[in-house]
Image 1 (cartoon, rainbow, N blue to C red):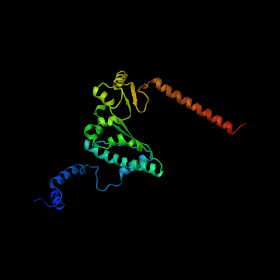
Image 2 (image 1 turned 45 degrees about the vertical axis):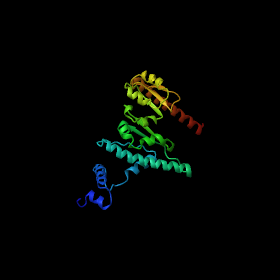
Image 3 (image 1 turned 90 degrees about the vertical axis):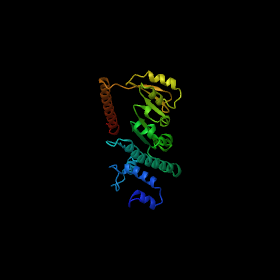
Length: 249
C-alpha cells in the first residue's frame, strides 16, 4: 500500500495511473532540481527579454556552467515559444487591425549543433521558426563550424548561406542541402582559399559569389586612418559652407 503523501497515493486519490504519475514525477524532478528554477521568481525574465527585443535592444544569452542538453532544451524552448507567440500575435494585429508592424527579430545561434542536432532539433521550436516565421518578421541565423551536426530539415530551410572552405565531405553535403546545382557549388567550395575566402549562396544573392576578406595588417589600418582623416576634413568643409551660407559677408 503506498505511503501517505507519495506520488502513488496522489495518483490513486486522483484516479491517475500510478506508474505514469511516478514517471512524470521523476522527469519533472530533473527540472525542479535546477538551481535557476524557483517557485517564486522576483520577476518575469522571459517577458523582460521580449520587451527589450521589441524595443530594438540586443540580448545575448549565455549558458555558462549549465551546458547540458536539458539546460539547452528547457531554456531555449521557454524563450523561443514565448517569442514565437508574441511575434505572431503582433504580426496578426498589424495585418488585421492596422497596428504598427513588430520590430524585425533576428535569432542567432552560435555552436548551433548543440541545439539543432538531429537528436534535439525535433524537441525545439527552431525548426518551426526556420520554416514558418519569416512571414512574421522573425529570421534565424545559424553559426557553426561543423554543419554536418545540424539537422537536415533545418539546413534545408536556411535560405542564404555563407560558408568558408570545408574539408569534410559530410560538412560539404550538409551545407549544400536543398540547393540546386550542387556539383558546381561543390567545385566552387573546393577552390576557396582556406581562412581567406567565403562563398555567398542562396536567396540573398542572384548567383553564388566568392568573397575574400581583408587582412588585418598595416595596409588595412592605414586605410582606416586615412578614411577617418578624409571624413573629418569633409565634415569641416561642410560646416564651413553652412556657416558661409547662414552668415554671408
